[in-house]
Image 1 (tube, one colour):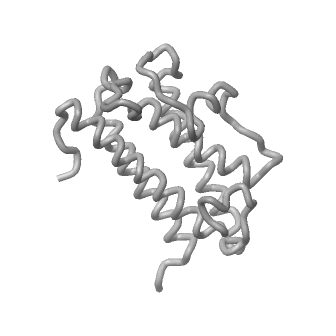
Image 2 (tube, helix red, strand yellow):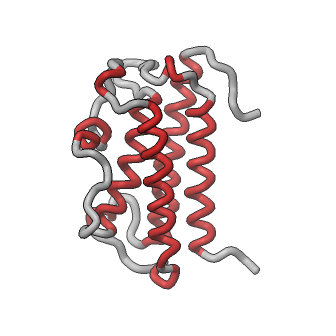
Image 3 (cartoon, helix red, strand yellow):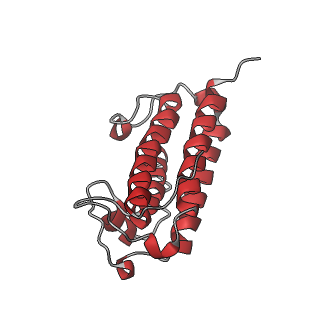
Length: 165
C-alpha cells in the first residue's frame, strides 16, 4: 500500500523537524544568540520563528483559535522581524523549545483530525505557501528546511562540527 497524501505530508513535517531539532540540540545554549553574518539569523530567533510560523498557519486555518503564543512573539519572530544578539530580548531557551514542540504537535493533529479534507482549499492568507492542505504541509516543511540551512551557517561560523555524517 502506498502512503496517503496525509502520511506523506506528516512525514515531511516530521523529517524537517527532526533535522531542525538535531541541529538545535547540537548547538550549545551559549551560542544560541550568535549572529553569524550581518543581517543573519541566530538559533534562538530561528526556533521562535519556526514555532511562530506553525502557530500563524494554525491561526489562519482556524480563525476562531487565535494565537497560542504570547503577543510579544509576533514582533519578535514574525516574518520581517530582525534578530538581535541580546538574550534578554527573547524567551528562555526552554520556552522556545517547548513552543516549537507544542505548535508542531498541534499542527500535525489539525491535519490528522480531518484526512478527508486533505485537498480542501485553504484561506487566501496562506496562498503564498500553498493552495490546499496537502501542499501546505510540504510548504511548511520546505520553509523549515530553509532554516535548517541557516542553522548550519550559525554552526559553521562557530566552527562546530557536523551533526549529520
